[in-house]
Length: 107
Image (cartoon, rainbow, N blue to C red; front, side, top):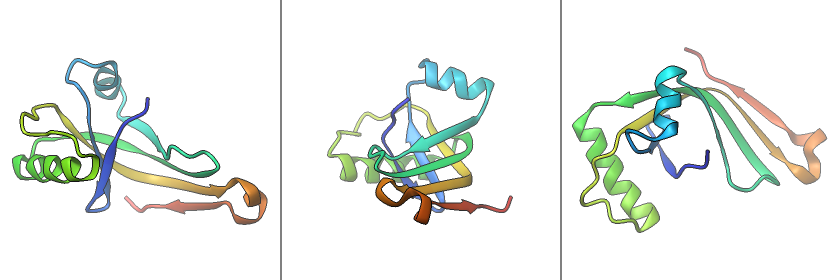
């Protein structure tokens, strides 16, 4: 599922409705994949999502999200998830064979 979000402190943060299918799926299985919107210059991150309960982080997320997307976050109350990356892949379609890259994170 497509999601807007942002990178903060080495993790990818996003929000979704508490009763959404995405939230239900993550509650049952926190493994997830994040992708860029442009497949010809793809970055694909595999990781694990966790709910963030830190009020200061939620506030910072809302401020940065509003700035990035010009989206009114004044009444923001939805859950925020933090995805800890495990592995990422980067590729440039025109030179996939010569320049595809993989990164691993230590736990």
